[in-house]
Length: 53
Image (cartoon, rainbow, N blue to C red):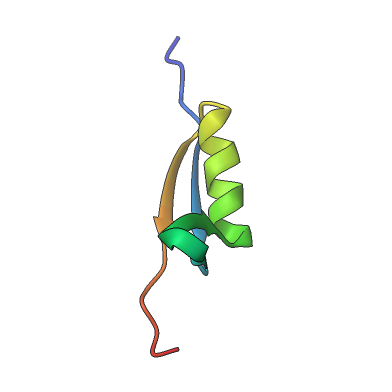
């Protein structure tokens, strides 16, 4: 019997918070979901793009 691995695709924003001293933190709801799914062993693809804002 073949075991199938769980997979997911998340799409949406990826945000960067930049704090004093150039310390950066990545976030955004879709990215956070992708991160936590990957920590649970699920293969995740993230779809986003760079905007003008």
